[in-house]
Each structure stands twice: as C-alpha cells, then as structure tokens.
Length: 424
Picture 1: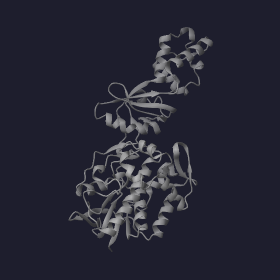
Picture 2 (picture 1 turned 90 degrees about the horizontal axis):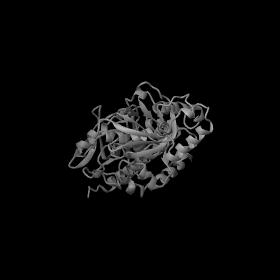
Picture 3 (picture 1 turned 60 degrees about the vertical axis):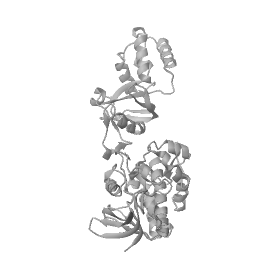
Picture 4 (picture 1 turned 180 degrees about the vertical axis):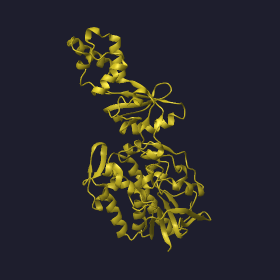
C-alpha cells in the first residue's frame, strides 16, 4: 500500500508527527521496531511523564543549552501552552508542579500514552510495530519510501524520521536514523552523553565515604582550566559509588564532557551553602563556637550541614571531631569554611551515552528548516525529536522540543504531499 507520510519511530516526536499529519488529512503509516509504542514516554518522569514545562518561551530556550534557539521558529507555531491544550483536549488533565513542570493529574505516564494511541486510532493511522526499518529510499533528490528489514518496500511520498538518539537504548533508541540522514547528505555532529551521572576517581569516591549522601539546594560548578566556573547549577545531587548523580550533576554533565576534550580531568566545585557569604559564615560559626567553648566542634556545628558531609569537611580541614573552641585555630576554621563554600575535586568522565537520559549531537540543525523540520537537502524528508542536534535539561524541556518538532514535521510533511513542492 502507498502512504502519503511514513513516520519512523513511536516515541513522543513520532506519535505527535503521525497525529499532526493525519489531522491534516494524510494517509499515515507509523512504523516502530519495538513491540509497543510510547516506551520512552511510559517511563519518563519516574513513570509520571513530565509532558512539558509551563515557563516562558525564553526560559524554555535557556534550559535547552544544545541549540535551543533553533526552536524559536517552531515555538511561534506550536508551543508549550499548545501542548497543554492538546493533551487536555485528549482528556488528559494536567497539573503544574515545581519549576513549571507539567504532569498528568493521575500521575500515570501510561494515561498519556493511551490518549495518544486512542487519537492515532481515531485518525485511522496505520501502525506497524515489530517492523524495524532497514533504509529510506531516495531518488532524484526526493523520498520514495522505506525498506523494512524483512525486505518489504513501502512507498511513501514523505518520511518523518523520529527514531531518537542513542540514549536509553532499551526503549529502541539505538542510533538507526543517523545512517539514513548521512545517506541523504546530512551532517551528523559528534554524539555525546548529556543528562548523565558524572564519574570521579577521587579517594573519597573510591572508598564510598559519601555514597548515598544527598546535598539539597547546593551549588555544583564545572570549572575551567583557570579555576573559573563554566556553569553552576543550584539543585540537589547525590554522591554515588562512582561519582555524582541527581539533578545538578545531570545538568553539569554535558559541560564535563566538553571540558574533557581540553584536559584529562575536570575540576568540580561544591558550595554547600550558596546563599551564605563566606566571611559572614565564618564570623557566625566563630561566635557560635566561642559561645559554647566546652562543646566539641562537631556538636556546635550540628545542623549546619548533613552530618556525614560535616564530618567529612572537618576531616578535610584537619579538625578533630572532638576538638573544642580553645583548641581550634582561626586558620583551621577558615579552611573549613572555605571548603563549605568551595570544595573542589576532580571528575574523570561520565557514564556512557547508553546510560544517559539524553543524546547530545545529532543531525545538524544547519541543514534543517527551523519552521517546518524539513531537510534542506532531500525533498519529502523530515526530522524531529532527539535525532536532531538539540538537547535540553531534564524538567520537561526535551519532551517539549520533541513534541513541538514532531508536530511541525508531521504537519509540513502532509502539506508537502498536498502540494508536491520541491525544496526552494
């Protein structure tokens, strides 16, 4: 059977692309190599599915450090508020949580997936699961259709590639689309892990001294070779048996990856009390210790920091836990306060791209029309979602980019079929 639009990939961008194309009257095929559609959606947000973020467009762009500005043209046509209306029209009521994150009221990601699947059914989209795509057929600078791995050729006037990147491979994102993009003449920029835990070979990591300890609302910075911050994120993070994980670490990870291209290890800095001025903190602690001269330092300082981190920094400052005010020098206390505000250690990498939440790099946005997601090199070819060289922080930003680019790719693929116009 001939199709107007073939969408490859059943993730958020592919589902949205298929719906948009079908809404515009196209005869649509959605093909995926897995057993189920929406696998990545079903596990996103801890199984609750953070469908978008309600912050301003400027804030959303700021939270997509990987080429977020490319999305301005897309957001002018379909944005985060449109995403909210779209899901609520499908019967999925949403609620806003911290930092603008939007979740289904039911807290069930599967409700989001089911709503999308019901809409595909209503629009008579043909779905083929367990059908891996081998190749996309091009001829005379235009798309002709797709080849399945079972050697079946399916003619299509337009093809939307929505197969994701290389992160979270168990959901089907194994980098298949990069080969098809290159065959069409596209550049695929270097791939790297983002939103991924950071690794370190420091002794306190290797001995698991702080394993499982969380620091809340601390500032984590990635420093350049001159010791100046490249990026700082004030959020929670957790020490692990291999390094750091949690929101602040995930957000810093892409900067660690980039800095490691310039040096063998990258210096990280932790400010455990980012709202406190260092000198004021010193004076406050000094007065507290002076007011209870017979108490052990660790007892006077109790509550300043999580206990394990407090004891760790006292050791790093060569201050005995049982030491009292009379035994403590100002220099040692200054050293302790400095470490509270600026504890530095070396990171040697991140976990691999397969362990990342998001893929950095992808199909070069220079070769994609920002208002239609059409290839500038091949008529009838469209890209959307994580296969593009676009990546954001966790918090609803990546899925917003996926849904918006998917919407446009499907819509304009169907319009291309209507008009049959070549690339201008």
